[in-house]
Length: 490
Image 1 (cartoon, rainbow, N blue to C red):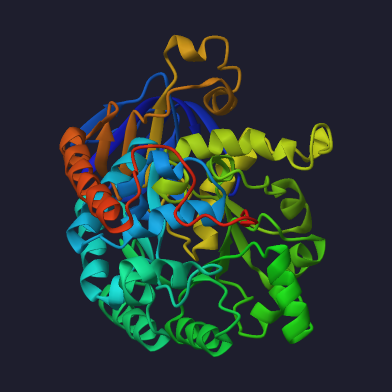
Image 2: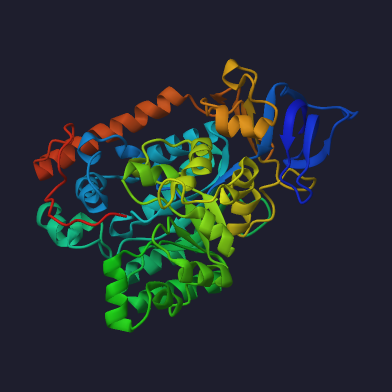
């Protein structure tokens, strides 16, 4: 199929020359970009899409998510409390998730991402009760229906934070109701996911990376086995890494090293690894991460949602650490807008350390944010076939309509207007591999009210089941399940 995107208001190609074209055209042929030009090309086109008044850019790449958490967004009981308090409230809900629930959550998550400009998403799929492969298969099947590119981070929980496993097992049953899984079962599920779902070819719709939820300092052999499996498969590694003071003390006492050094001893600190959040890394960590080629998924809204510290993105970039954006799980964000993360991330790092402590010369620019979310994020995932609008690459493209009054006076530079002045995050168009998934702000592959209804039905059942097991009222905001003093924040 041959498609012409025409009369583009402003086209940000994010190519090697950083070209920005006005009143431009893009020719898409058989799923790939065939031509980028200003003068309208001649020839036959199966469809012509008028993007006058729109800013057009490569499809955005989301580096971190937990699709399953979309089932438990804005739960009143989980809206107050730091990380451990929040997890105490959330785990009993998640213990009831079925493969069908996960499919519904995946469709809802991807719908929201596509509607806000994302065409590729990583999903840290660490919640696999009893390492049951039906969960992974349900997630991948739903992603294929949505038509979005998926980087599945196959994982599983071999333990829980602090004393949560013991607390929850007393209520949910052994091993926290099956959420905690033996390392051998997790490794077996990883191998199966690689064998069944991983595609390393050009234009792959599904690729697999391997992940641990957090660094398991009690099972370093397990961490080494994951790293070895990833090296054999040629795939990436992903983990939450923002070592708290107690983790640093543990590593000093037990290993005589910093947490990053301990992780490096398991062969995780290498190109192809990207961390989530990294709110607590210091200058020494950043230098070593940059030297090793380790990248970071920055999830701005999650930090505000859980009251965590602001990631010093400007310092990471100054050290040469590659950084991209992530939406993070629905229950630790509650919004799922990819464009929204760019808008917030562009601003929020300026507050790191307090008022006025970040020199304005180190502030990200709108174009920095865009390239971090496109060609930069694609490179972090090891992909050279997406992230730019250039001939020969996959036609993953998004557009936002800037013709409304919300952008009045803000089109001197269209991208600055979109990221600084805009309030609407809904895409006018999102295209994946040349196929339209969103047009004029509407999904083309399903009705979003039906997607929402399917998700709501699953959520209602999870809330009812968790309330019955724990005696907690999830519809009222209060302290978390079994809250103890001195809980730790992210």
